[in-house]
Length: 419
Ligand SMILES: Cc1cc2nc3c(=O)[nH]c(=O)nc-3n(C[C@H](O)[C@H](O)[C@H](O)COP(=O)(O)OP(=O)(O)OC[C@H]3O[C@@H](n4cnc5c(N)ncnc54)[C@H](O)[C@@H]3O)c2cc1C
Image (cartoon, rainbow, N blue to C red; front, side, top):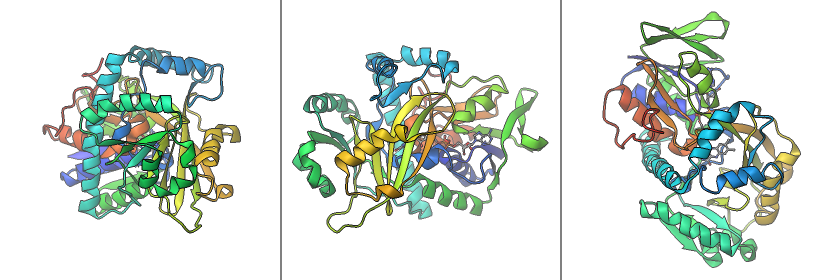
């Protein structure tokens, strides 16, 4: 079949890969000049099923309310900058109870675990090196009380097949000797033993090349303005400037822009932008142990990993609309983390920075599968875990297009199987 994929982030390109492999004739339409320039370029590089916890939790409303008056929260909302978010916000609040949080976490976890296997398989089959490191991820705590709460919370994913060890400060240093100089600042960590990390841009670009070798076409600098329908089916993606690309099946993987395109055929996708900040620094070579293990500071909610000879650090989730500007003030959590825990890790005066938007659903799992016209499929809304969940999501969507039963249940992932 002729399939048109809209968006060439990590999700669109993995979709193209599975469709191309299944023998379809794939055209990817991307508004930017190359693949993986938005959320897929700014992420922390963590492949982290161990971090599948839904953001909509019983404590989230308090945190968001607090963000209206104080500056130190990682999760923030500005109702003046994001006025269109009322419906999304109400749906998010509806998910903020213990029962829904558990259910949503487990849907994400199942997909993330499957997706990590698919990612590893793609990398092995296609011999893709993406500066990947398979040495686990440390979820670090400084405050003993929060650490205790983190251990309780972690049991949920542990009971569902995620290998997580509890480490005291000595154990942390054993797992990541690079942290020895700051051991006295740590209460301990939960060690996601099977989690990993890597460069999502490198992965996406190399996979694009594989797709092209299989015959897929990539049209860059072509933004889809709307979908044109006829007889209940999408017939073409209409581009800026009047061109169009026709096909038999269409997959929407346009990140935070997916709702805008879907709305042109009457499909409402509950996906909102959650802005994050991303910094990249050259690693400092100083002798001694080199940093290997990716990590998250569970109090500042700053994540980081080593990507080749660079250190990537990310912070914050702000519901402030679609803009992606940043100021020095916005980088304060990254600066604080660098100062507190990684003072010698990188050349901090040589940083490059960006802000980008995570495509968030109110409940957490992405939206996969057919929606609206019967030849329109969605693969979008992967939130804070799109690198982790892309490969599995794309395999599922490709299987659904081919009428095959996906390897894992899609309950809680399709538009119709969620509240
Ligand atoms: C700060 C930060 C840290 C993160 N850390 C992690 C992490 O450690 N691990 C993890 O798993 N995930 C992480 N994520 C999440 C992850 O990066 C995203 O979920 C993922 O990149 C989403 O991929 P995507 O392809 O859906 O979206 P995008 O990468 O945004 O790609 C969408 C593409 O669609 C294109 N597009 C949009 N509209 C149109 C149109 N009309 N026509 C044509 N093309 C269009 C865009 O130009 C873009 O290239 C992080 C995200 C952020 C912001």
